[in-house]
Image (cartoon, rainbow, N blue to C red; front, side):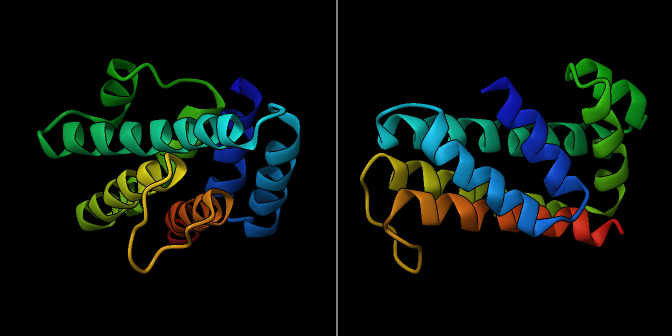
Length: 140
């Protein structure tokens, strides 16, 4: 899953929805034989980035400089550059909505029904990835 998390964040942060969707489709068919296991892994990768973005933004709101907040959250390398570009433009409300969406998609991937969300796990994951991509588009 390490490659998925890295490439998804690159595609999302660079505002390339078509690339993001292609990665999601590739993940669906290549991570595991069981699509339910693969969906859980993809959700984990997306949710991990969303939680990290929220933690870093909260640290920035508490007065920590962005570089320090990134280091404290173990974000470095290419991911650090993406976060540096996205976070100044991400509102607390947008990150809160993303976190709530990740929570709902977690339930969908595990078989729960959520109103106003696709019930098929991969469609819900694609919607979550595109919502995350809106942060990248705002930073352009």
